[in-house]
Image 1: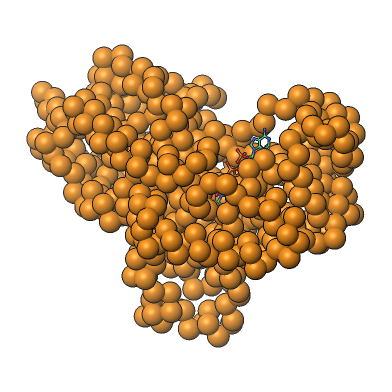
Image 2: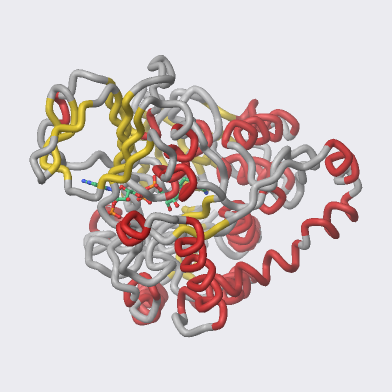
Length: 489
Ligand code: NAP
């Protein structure tokens, strides 16, 4: 059998799953299915539709390298435009024909050299190669607040926005001040009668401009050389390097620059000294994922906006009761309270070779060799898997580098000497030791804050080295770290 006839199943049709489909087709694979739990592609950009949704990575860098988009309307794109870009790209590359919608994977078992798959619908399938492109932040986290279900108004999570609820002239509470809460406040401060922002831990806000591209600029960007020159792709890579260096070295020049910009933003943008102190974080910048905003401080100083730093006692029929005893009467409560960052493919059940379960492998925390492969899980690869780079940079770029690495593992399986490829236990153990030691040096661990970067064990779960190390690691697999099984033919 021509090896490119191997059957490949991809789980998830978000940014990474679409990338996998395009690259698999390009490599000559013809037997590909992408299973998607929803009825549309798009992942994060399908699920998040809240007012003000904007990508905080510059548009032209939040784009597949092989599918530049001269038509982005702003320096940082609104979410709807990004969703349209992925929908267009999916159609252009014929990926829509590979996708089976409304199919949520329930289990995958490695049996007799193949992955046996079961969908929640009862659909069964099998594959030689299995790719998980299931995303990182896709399971909304609701706070454990007493009385949440007693509220008589509208209450929903930011990733489940209820567009049937009118906002104009309403009394709205937004709980949470990650990038999501901050963007919602900026969007609603002018529209609602009253917007209250419930902030438990003030965050550093990095100032950023988000102007529009003129028609002339967009026309000029059709020429890739003009686009390249205007967008400075090398400068962007250098900025990501400096940012990641700042994470691993709190005394680096980049860390000082970012801290200075955030501090100046707070000092210069908030005129009321009392409000300024209530907004001042007590942890190091970048300890939590940096919030970029052109206008949050202006929004929270609008007459109808209020910062609430008093802790929430409970929710009741008419609104939120804070610990000082005050009842804040409300029409709408938005939970901008983030996501469970450690689910990845789960709750799907996964069993690898000889009955080894994912739950046993991940009993302490999710892990993967170089964020992509797992021992005893042959021919299974993850995009944006555990311990991969996540932060204030493009996850599309990260997934493209990961694909470059995965494509070499696929070539190995396509060759004559290897039917099943997976990393050794030793490779993962040594990698984990080094990763955990490095994670304890990062600002996420030492910066004095709690965040979703930390695993349940308190150890940062994201890539703890700089960007250049990631790019270097993704250039080529170290074959000594892998087991190759050749099956008798
Ligand atoms: P997040 O960063 O995890 O923030 C969750 C917020 O909810 C925090 O402020 C947290 O407060 C608060 N919270 C949680 N439980 C609470 C409770 N019981 N009472 C009061 N407050 C509570 O979530 P997110 O803002 O949705 O962002 C998720 C990730 O997506 C982040 O990395 C974010 O930067 C990223 N994002 C990116 C973009 C983009 O443009 N690329 C846009 C939106 C989001 P504490 O800090 O006190 O825990």
